[in-house]
Length: 184
Image (cartoon, rainbow, N blue to C red):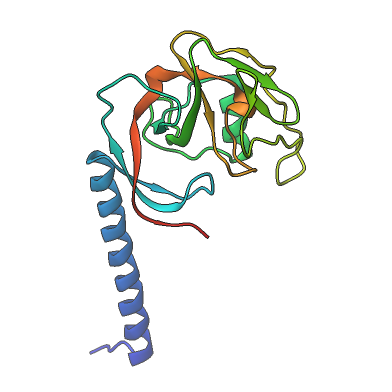
């Protein structure tokens, strides 16, 4: 009869435990995704567990939302650079968690920071390169088109409308509500 040495059995137990733990974690994340929960792993908003709350009214400035990014050249480049993760949105992206700072008809001016209808937006300084030194091209500014929103995160390294411009409000999944988060 062949016996597996004790050390080898211990390793298999550790491997089995890790696989089991990973499978349970993936299952919880998948079930949570179908129940309106999302895990945020980007610094744009606090890290952790968030919930999508259905929006039963028109969007307004100040709303913190989950929104699916549109399939545009800017979003494709963001995906290639690693700014966007894979997720459940129609184009395979993960939803963004951002604050709406301007809605249809509002004027956006881009300089060294962002101005909305002539008022400077707090924490909106632009940077010319990303964390790896690659150039960032700011949005040229203008009127937010009908059916679109301009998004912002106060995190200085955030990929938001400062760079990709307004996006369709039709991509909004709902309001973002923190459930269990950690802000470093």
